[in-house]
Length: 229
View 1 (spheres, one colour):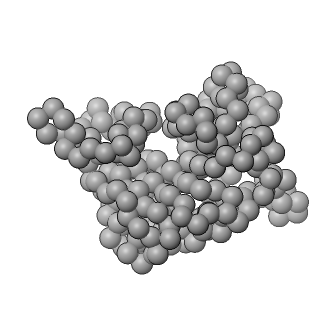
View 2 (view 1 turned 180 degrees about the vertical axis):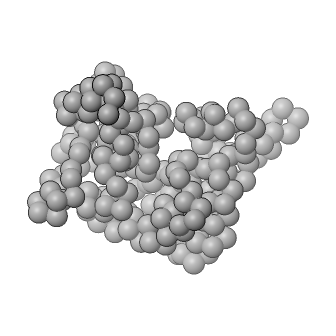
């Protein structure tokens, strides 16, 4: 393991807004803030999750735009989470937290109705393992254990396969309302967005490291927003 990784793992232990709980501890003790996240943030503002947040750049950007909401980035890679945790602590951001865990365990961290929004941004499309896709029925059922009524979900991906799977195979089987759907978020016509709305402009406003890389390669970015009924 590289020296920088070891340094980051050690520093992660000092961040008050980064939570790392092992499976055994979750099984024996549960998670102390489950149902009590208002105590961490010091308010009752709505909670948004970013699943598979990587370095947390999207989580941080959304939290800057919406100080009236609380944001929690979730990822299994501690070396990646270090960046988001460090930035949010350096900037003294009070509406940001991070959880290091597998997405399969995410319902262990939140009580029923505690989360009102989820972003899934450029996750692994798991082309050979549909059941591991973060928009599979298995995962959507997991999220529903802690999502509030009328909660909103976003999928932003460069994977046409994941986009098609979610739009055509999964969402038609769920009790949801598709609010926005585009297979090319940045498509332009005569120098202007081909499709424009306040929601789409916000989805364009924040870009992850991977998104910028895909755009440089002229790869279309797809986006779906849906509301749970």
